[in-house]
Length: 179
Image 1 (cartoon, rainbow, N blue to C red):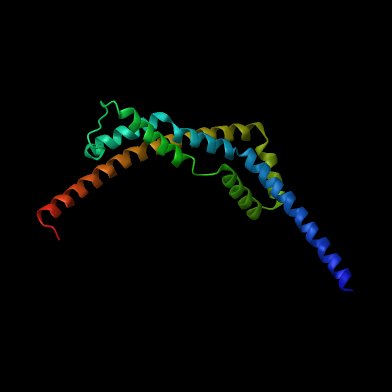
Image 2 (cartoon, rainbow, N blue to C red; image 1 turned 135 degrees about the vertical axis):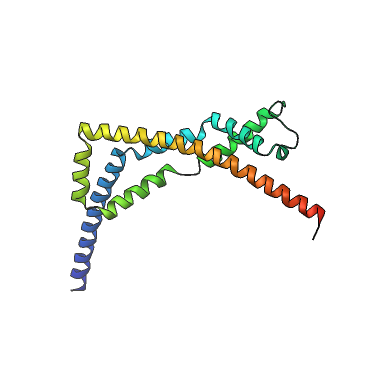
């Protein structure tokens, strides 16, 4: 009797695993159709843009020239400053793993939607109009990220300048009255 129960339970587990694989497969197809990887690559490319690192270096210099200890944009060392900023940007922009991003989307879709809902969505997303909509959405996401990076760069420059002024004021007060 126990053997029969174990075989039945094992069969149910296999059926459940097969159902999850079907649902997970549908969720993965939907993630592929939504161009999650491509949108991430677009964002990563904008983030890594070398021009941004040059602008970052200049904005940081403009905000706090003293922090560069005499190196200026006119210095022969300035190219190395820009390279340092570029390396920092590379590190920051490459921090997210696209496999992890796709897995999160796949898991959420598989958990929140039934296999029938996934298949219906996939069928809808396969139409020419839906493909054009997805292309427009990807373009909007790219433009939004470019806008956000530009705004962030300006915000960081302002925050750095404010930080440097506050720290300078604090240092002056400390020199006048150490405690």
